Length: 279
Image 1 (cartoon, rainbow, N blue to C red):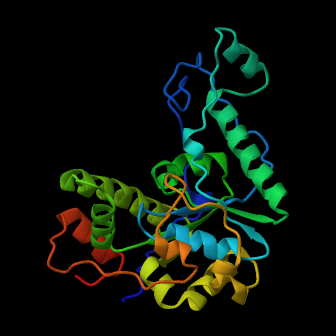
Image 2: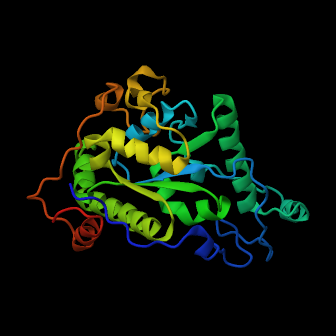
Image 3: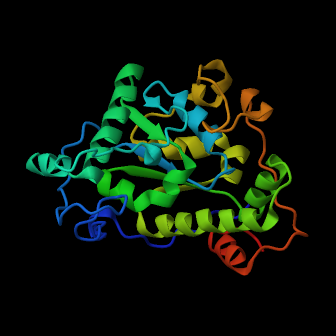
């Protein structure tokens, strides 16, 4: 397939800091006008896989997790881990510690990554939760030095995969879901200085693609990454990643192309062309 197009993107240093509305936390609750500064991080430069659902992120995870220095656990769903300030005076107490609700959540997220990394004995941690794509500006605020693997797949193939996976699929809802992910992914691709790969290329030439990923992450490539079935990657189950027989097989399967007879919404067609997919 055609190589994904990567137009010039601004570096993280050139991006404006992600801002919240004055006096509002990450959940939109009133904080009395106080917005906390970023606290120190235990994990300075975590790695996030940004992708749509059904785009091969579990395959990329297990390939990376097979590296002796990279820990890539199941989907962590950090954005659903929240802090509750349960008393009227709690916000004032946290303010005295230079914290607000959102920054408390960031500290907790950071601690979770650090705990998992420490337990693994490795030195690079990767979170591949697809909904992270929907909150990438907040990830950037939490970790200004984070690194990003932007994983693309043809939107038509994503729609087909979602349709085949679901019982009594709502086709309109699926198209809307894929469009939402695709818009946020394209936004991240343009604004973050990440490493862009495609699922199609990953399955067609996994050695070349994983070599490029390792170079971006600053670790040597290891051939054992391609034999991910020889490693323990935890339980494959719903809500924590792909659990299909294909991923459980321990082998890399070629990406299925989209059905060329099925039309895409105009915006998805436009983004697919921008990503270098033939129309």
